[in-house]
Image (tube, rainbow, N blue to C red; front, side, top):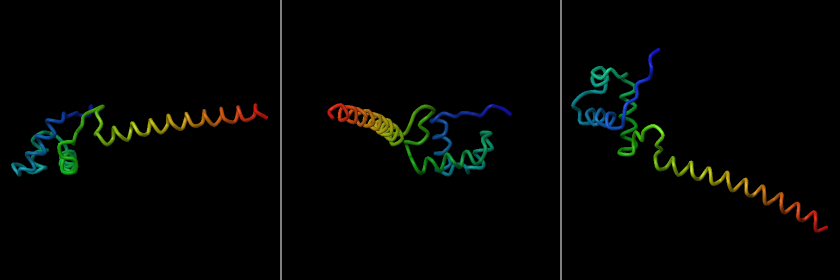
Length: 97
């Protein structure tokens, strides 16, 4: 099997805008570019859903996804801190008796 092709954000947007402007159909565009039809169709679907925020690129998260990642990390840190405090409270309570 060959390596998977990677396309940058500008290329995907250009393809999608061409299709949305009805200059070409998704299947015609896919054939011209040597990209599978479902790939092009998915790009259009994502662009219609997310607009300018579509196709953030590898390693780059959408703002919502970045916020979720930060909040999950914060939650994990707070849970760990809470467990430490519970153990410390139990230790000191035991020593007071």
